[in-house]
Image (tube, rainbow, N blue to C red; front, side, top):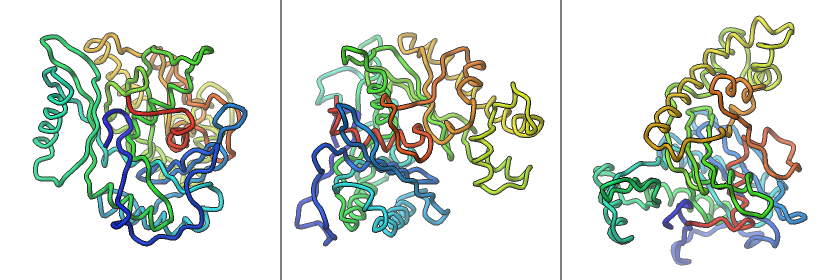
Length: 378
């Protein structure tokens, strides 16, 4: 695993590789990796290509995951990858090449914050590994990446680290090989989104903004808040009871809706009727507003904490990623609650593929862009 935001470029000797179908090879000129974002409830797949000097989407797809295919642990991840393998023969015609960059759910690649004494790079890496070993206890071998988030007083450094079990990385690699795909990057979701934000906020001179920003990753199973600067997540927190799935379940129960109908209502109506007239005004907004209010409270609590502990990292803007970004008028609603600029993530290029909100596919798209935009470990 590399040191820095990108977790790993996986290599396996030819002798250990299982036999795998190969109808094409490598990465065609101008095309990015096939970006695969494995979530708890769905897999997002996207690929970008360089067009007129900018990476633009050429294909994207979403695979919902049934309960038996969800990656709750290593065995669940194996079922997830086998399901992807069963669907890939139909999907492969949409994508070019066979090189993959991939992320896993946060519970399989959790970020950890460590405080260690400063020293040489080798000394600090040894201390980080020892801290992770102590924290993980009797779990098996792992690979990790780390970067400095904050230099404090008394020669102490706050380090952000992420570790993945070797068993998990081997499940990913072997199942992709059976699809005829090669995993070149196994990355961590907060790092991928931080890079996406860098490329979205590039100035006219091509330099990235150094202004601190926050990312709200509003997901189905859980939601996280990341504070980012210079293309790296500096502070991360999982928000309590702030996922999107309970919102869907509440709507489905109260209004006797299917999941598809619930998704449609959130995207087409959402929070909009709280300040406009309409036939659904008395119904939808009041049902979902309490959950969004709780989300805003959790975000505000975290903002208050970071402003007191890390004043130099207090964000000027909150960017929203994930499935929750499809809720209509979410951004202005949160902005009013938090008194901070809130924006749904959109790529810098206006051209997008026609499936889903760009914020839903942001992780997969950013993974695909890795070789096109020169993203690398710092």
